[in-house]
Amino acid sequence: MTCKVLLTNAAENDMRLICDYFSANQQENRVEHFLVQMEKAFQRISQAPETGSWPKELLELGIRDYREIFSHPYRVVYFYEDNTANVILIADAHRDLDTLLQMRLLT
Image 1 (cartoon, helix red, strand yellow):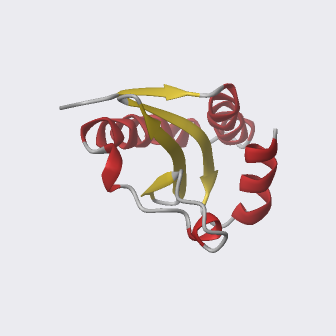
Image 2 (cartoon, helix red, strand yellow):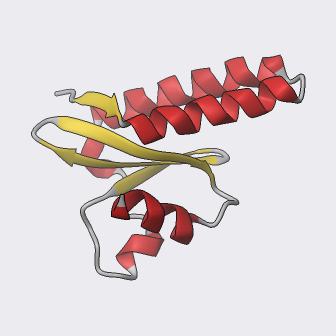
């Protein structure tokens, strides 16, 4: 059974910023690769939303409402309810996810 995968405005903006970065640095081939990667990640979430791991930054706080999958080097963070996975964050795994997740979840 598959679920719907929806992107929040913030997640859509994450994707746009990543693509803009590649375009600004004349790396158009990376834009296409990134978009293909994300499509595969969304398909994986759709097919098995409950198999994503809990983000360690949130797990340390006892929060288990969110899950994530990795699509190297990106982390895709989402919550799953009512047969819908809502993607809230797409970020390079090297970024400070503590701060990003706190900002994203508090707004």
